[in-house]
Image 1 (spheres, rainbow, N blue to C red):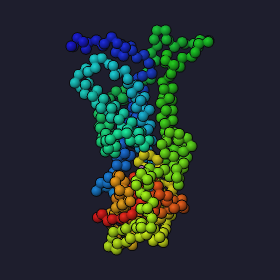
Image 2: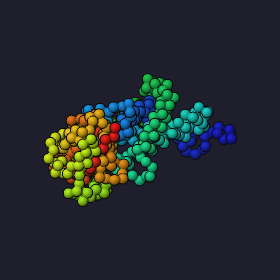
Image 3: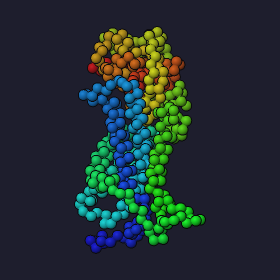
Image 4: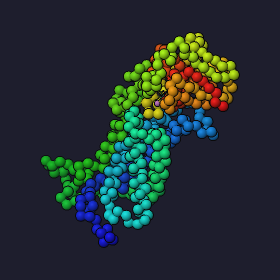
Length: 403
Ligand SMILES: Nc1nc2c(c(=O)[nH]1)N[C@H]1C(S)=C(S)[C@@H](COP(=O)(O)O)O[C@H]1N2
Ligand SMILES: [Mo]
């Protein structure tokens, strides 16, 4: 057995010298790795922020300002996640020959280190692939996406932390060290003088220089970013060829994630019998005419979806604080809004007191001056500042006091 492991198998990827690219070096691996780790760090922090906005912690009061806070943090979350895809592929390319290093396990510590790397790579591939599929609005799996995405993020960060700690000395040495030498192989030497009629070598005998490698890396990260970030940066919309959602091409200037039909909200439900009921010391039951007769306020606020698209709109509606005051609800109360949509995860949402009382939080009836379409939440929906799109509940018919 030991004898078997002494020598690499005589087949290609294991043969010494099987990988001849002179572009791979610890320095290249370290630089790409640092860019990838930076993306992972931003993605993790913005992901946690998004999670705790949707599942609040008792001791953490989320501020209502700046109004574009969630738009920025979730835009960064999705953009850094997308940028991590080409970076991860490059990183894997840069260390790929090590997959075939011989012997595969040199010691217990080495075996453990490789195991952590396997966990790290597998969890990152899973996270980025399912995340990308999710923002493309395709849900081919049966496991609960958000819980899994949340749990796996800790596996990634834990394994990455260990990986960086183990590799720290090597990374520091690689970054401080001299430029890796271009290895000239027999018959592949870089000629001292240009030879007329011969193609010029470009740095390594391999046709692409290390500088060009970084240009390719930067260009691929730039390309995936530029062609998708238009879903949230309006100025880049014209080049957003791969953005799953493009706000200005959508009804009333805003994509619709859940249509009224798929939420089973029928026109009959929002007809003459519709009432907005508010449970409070002075219970209210308001018809659409009653609601339209109340003082209306204009607010400019974004809808920022967890999937990374976002768009700002001018909303017109009744300040939520005015409705709560009319029902005699205490200003320190947390409330819940309830949709006509039954079932589904987003039929209700909790509104903490600071959000409920913010002067920018409205129960919107109009968008851009037009009556809300049924798909956008007619007759009335919640729009609050610095709030994930999933919590901007549509088709509200009831407001309840929680605590
Ligand atoms: N009742 C209800 N409200 C909802 C949803 C839903 O599924 N049901 N989806 C939410 C999500 S995920 C987003 S991003 C916004 C999108 O709002 P829009 O369809 O008006 O653009 O509505 C939110 N409000
Ligand atoms: Mo969303």
